[in-house]
Image (cartoon, rainbow, N blue to C red; front, side, top):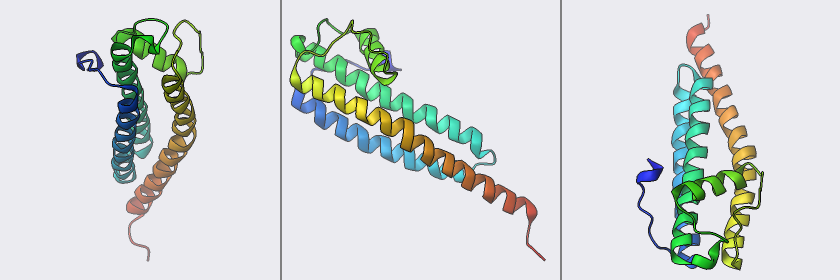
Length: 151
């Protein structure tokens, strides 16, 4: 689906707005997924599904933003980004590998990449913890439901 997303031109300023709106969407998806986890018959499986969905959305959000910036501001990166290179760069930053083959060159784009780095920590730490807690809550609910009313 990511490759079907049209690459639009966004200015560096609009990129921050786009990421903020994407962040709100990401939080909405996370809240929706938490509700699904708590009510699921197999909450652990639903939590894994939710983590994949949230991380995928997060990566696509940044990849499309970097792709658009590359089209609008050719000097933003040391090379032109197409869909594959933008996704590769996003995953490279997410995984903290940092090969250095693609590099942000303008300060606004460096700040955006730094923002992604900081949000990576939130995704890896807080979101995993939140989803694990939701799965535990769902397991407790499932156990209570199977025990039935206490005598």
